[in-house]
Amino acid sequence: MTSWQLGTSISPFYSFRLMTILDRSKDGTAKIWRVDAESGNPGSKSSRPFDSVKHIEDNVNYDAHDIGCLDWSRDGNFLATASSDDVVRIWSRSSQALLHSFRGHTDTVGTVRFSPSGTHLLSSSFDGFIILWEIRSENRIVRKYEHKSAEGENLPDIAWINDTTFACSWPGALIHVFVTTSPAIFRTYRGHTQDINLIRVTLDRKLLASVSDDKTVRIWKFEPLRLMWKSGEVWPSEGSVGGEVDQGCLHVLQGHGRSVATCKWAPPLEDGTENILITLEDDKGPIRLWDAKEGTCLKTFTDHTLTCYGVTFSPDARFLALAGLDGWLYIYSLKTHEIVRSWTERTERKNKRAIYEIDWSKDGNRLAVCLQTGTVAILDVTDLKQ
Image 1 (cartoon, helix red, strand yellow):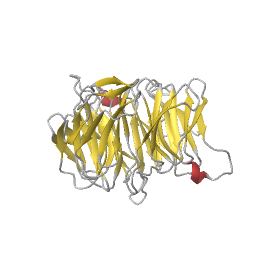
Image 2 (cartoon, rainbow, N blue to C red; image 1 turned 180 degrees about the vertical axis):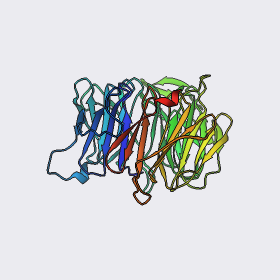
Image 3 (cartoon, rainbow, N blue to C red; image 1 turned 90 degrees about the vertical axis):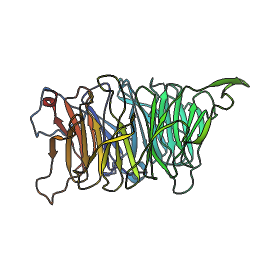
Image 4 (cartoon, rainbow, N blue to C red; image 1 turned 120 degrees about the horizontal axis):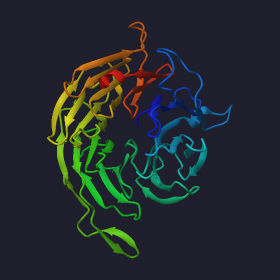
């Protein structure tokens, strides 16, 4: 599991509301910043957050309460955070207060994911369980799914397919598909030969990408599930689960020299298609842009000298931004694949100020950049629209 020092995420409700995880500072807080697009001078700094999500009281052991993951609900009304104290917390935007503290895990929670409607949440933990929660009920556990990873295996990742169906990476280099109303496995994808690090689903829920330590990325086509009713519960129809090697796999994207750590789908193109995928390797590996429909590599980016953690697409799918530990952020045109903008906070070459995470505002006018210095820079990229 990757250990992030800092993270930033822009709420889907407000274009300029930012969530910053100050994990490295060990203060057990997440700060929400409201950025006014009409005020502020270039280079100006703010020390007053709009709100602060504090997981712990003062004068306690911060090491046990680092905030490790977060997720906004799609409508921006709720924020989920989880820390090393095994508790999943739900925060309300309207009341700007803690709504629920979900207790059910017995070890660090590494992933939280809201359902598309925001009514449910999935959490994945090192205790060997994925828990499905109902958001509007205190400590309401709908169901537990036991994964029991062997020592050294990655924590299962989660991707919602629709409001009642979700996929999980699984021990044994598998991907299982579940529905929220049943404990059964409804679909199995098999093909990777080593741990799966991450899975991501396109917005139209037709394609699923999985990245693995086996140096490959697989593109899976999601077909409708076949269900039947048995003993008062929904179960998969006989013979519909699959599980044969590469059954349902459209392409195996090869050519990576190292383990593939992460990937991200671009927003839909002008014609509505969703087939552009970016993949990042571990340990200073090159970054690749793919046409997932054709299974071909469109471009290999090698401009960064150190590992890249930050990747985001502009909302109109015209630009790609990449940022890395070398302190540089590059913005590329997705049409020409050339750099159209670069930025760094470094004043001297020896003055390395790593960038850990970036995010684009939904209107495309701003980029949030999370820095090693414990600050978040807001870049004005309005002119890229011209």
